[in-house]
Picture (spheres, one colour):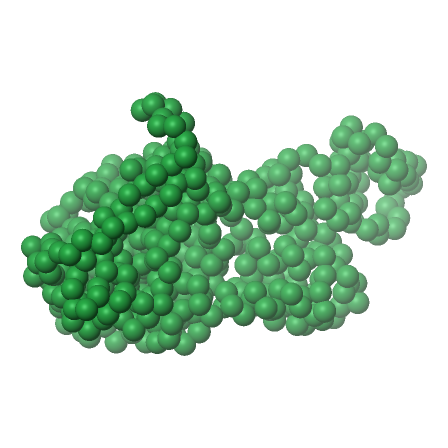
Length: 519
């Protein structure tokens, strides 16, 4: 019942679960994380390059793709890396999946994803990770089933395994107990077609019942449970049984091998299992459970696979890599890439650092701000917060400083993925970038960003006035007047637009540079 209620919550919220912030995503969808994953994927592709059939694409499938922001940024980052590597000949298709058909509909119409889908680089599918079955790609019509996947495959999952069913056990005095869960609610029972009960109102409890170590009648799984019984004491254990089944499904699907990149709340060290909180229900009625990455790793090792875990306990996000399937290599390139992109300094480390640094951004110089933005891979969520501070440091800027600002704007825009109600949208990132570039004298590029703002965010007198300023500086005088008239239609009391229109109509050449208006 609990899992079904959660599914109903996600189905009802749709993309609003992400755009409203009720589902965490800042770490797992950041450009930095997308680049880290892309580097690991590139390492794996190097390892299996000799096995790849060049006439067929490599499939990279994301489980529970949510808003689509991670997928968009990952495709961008991996494409960059491939173009700069010896694997330029390798083609891939990134498959975004979700259990809800409404999410697939949302991706199909998203302006950032549409060009990628039309080019065939991105495709979509409805897929239930808790009940995996053959995968029907929406756009190409391809069906992925065992024997029909020509190349090694890759599977990405962020904040997914904490949201599908797990089993719960306890260990005490050498005895294994199954924890039988009960759910109570102060609300009256709902009819079958009635509204979803708020998960936050549910009271969850469980009773311990002794059970045998041959619980699953599967030697691999039962061996892991028995190991916990023998080595641990006085501990509650979550066992990610549906995640195991999901790994199994893709192991059977991908005849030539499969790599998993899994990011989630949880731990990969057995010694930390007793210190992990089991999970909870948020005020937004999202239900999650900590993921036992150690058990997943033990299972993969039992299948003869390779496991890469973080060297230390994560603060917020554990990212592990599992590799199944035969290969003539020992996956050295994958291991090197994982160590550099995740093990030594990865998304979890960055999340802790940025939390501290964002409290100091108002005290940073322009150079420090740009260094900070480079460290977060020009994440639009951070760029948009820094634009007002960067503007305060202008126009006293050198040519090299102007180049750095142009780079920051271009990188942020390349990673921009609007969802309708996030921080970047509230400020209007393209308009902010337009003001930044106009202020350093890059009027043509500033104009492009202002026009993008009008297309994405809608007509705004501040932005239409800024378009007029750019047109004027580019000596496109008639168009400048037209945009001033649009501004006055939107805001008849716009004094600067009135003054500038009178000046342009009464003066043969433009005078004054004018200052772009901040959003």
